[in-house]
Every structure is written in structure tokens, then in C-alpha cells.
Image (cartoon, rainbow, N blue to C red; front, side):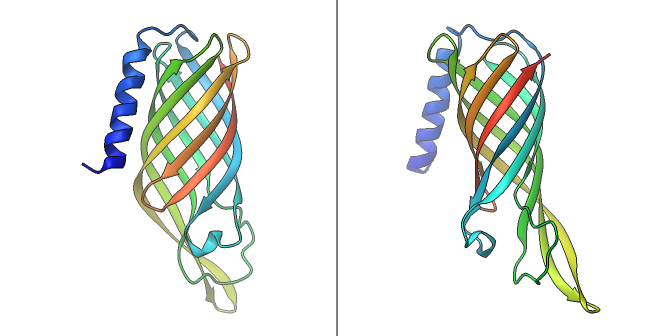
Length: 179
């Protein structure tokens, strides 16, 4: 096992052991909206970061564990004007499990592990105009974050989410409402 993987597994085990001491939000359905920036190692990101918008609909099993279906935009190339030399990630939808532990009365840290489908797009010239070729890849996502509970139903979080296969990362701020 690689040294980095051992560290991640150790951190998740520590997070799980602390979880039994937590007091937090009650179980229930929640919705979340995230705004952030995506960055990566591909040529699409050579000029820096691009805006990213995300959403999630989940169920909080208890104060420490949640599951959610989520989506993220990884590109804002709405009207492509030029062909691209390689495919680049444009969006991702998936499911994730989230483990959370409190560090103060209204602050908690969390880790997330998910899997989903990333859409890759390549713009090509076809009959005098740019046309899109889309493919999909299954990939794992790993993330960490910090959450501030504003009230019993609302919270705000800062999160880093890594898309492992396409080497793309998203840093986002999210607002969550627990129904």
C-alpha cells in the first residue's frame, strides 16, 4: 500500500472512531448547492481554473453518516468556438458516502468517498462548424471538507473534491438545507 493511501485510510479510521462521540444534525433529507473552481493537469486548464457549480440531494443517516447523489460541472465552455486537441471533463454525476466528526459545537470535519460518471467532450470541425463528441468514464471521487452549522437546518461548508481518473480537483463553498 502506498504511503499516501495508508495516511488516508488511517485518517478515515480516526474519523470513524471519533464519530461515536458526535452530536450534530438530526437524520433527514437535505439539499445542497455548491459554487467553486475546477482545476486540473489537462491542457483545458492551462489558463488556470474554471467556474464549477454543484448540487446534491442526500439523506443523513445519523449525525455522522450521510449518503448523497450529486453532480458537478467541470467546465463552462458553453459555446465552443474552436476545436479541442483532446477530450476534457465537462461534468460528473455520482453517489457518495460521507463520514463526519465534530471538532467544536458547530464545526465539523468530513471525508467523502464516491463513484460516478464523468462526461468528456472533444470539439471537432464537422461541415464547417464545431461539433461535440462525448464519452463517459467511471471514476472514483475523494474529498475532504469543513462544515459550519448555522442553525439546526442550515450549514455552510468548504470542500476539496478530487476526481481521481481525470486528475481534476474542485474547491467549493456549499450551502446545505436539511428538510
